[in-house]
Amino acid sequence: MNIRYLFSIGLHKIVVCLLLLVVLYGCVQEPDRFLGKWERYDDKSAGSIIKVEKIGDKYEGKLLKVSGDLADMGFVEGDIKWRHVDSKDESHYEGSDLLKGVDTKGAVRYKRYEEVYFELKNDDILLVSSYAEGEEEGTRQKWKKLSW
Image 1: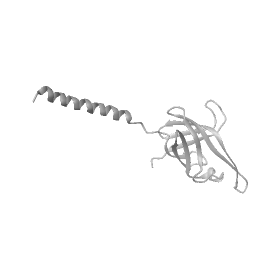
Image 2: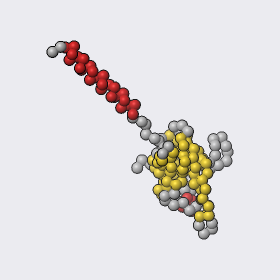
Image 3: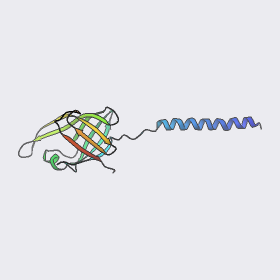
Image 4: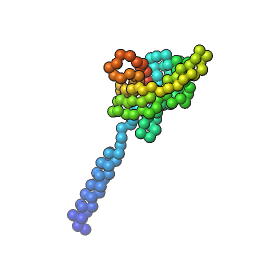
């Protein structure tokens, strides 16, 4: 057998393996930090849990657990709290937040969605604001990522 022939077969296999590794590495994506379960904290709705999923090219947040003021305002498990959420960059999102109003007996009198801004402060803290950055007025929700 010719040594050059054996060497060319071995080199060919190495080149193919390297090309496969490059292709596989290119297919690996970082996990989407916005997806998952988030728990509200540091306000009167603390303990509420929302699950964020990607629906098509947008995100949606469905309530899994409702606590405190959210329960008092007529929110229930399964409500789509956040909808039509678009990614602006890796840490900023814009979308709509469900608001409800109740009468003195607790019956829901209105539902509407308001534009909000989402900011991932790091991998496990999410701030939701009803105002644009730099404005003084508005509401702010704080959510922490759950690992389960």
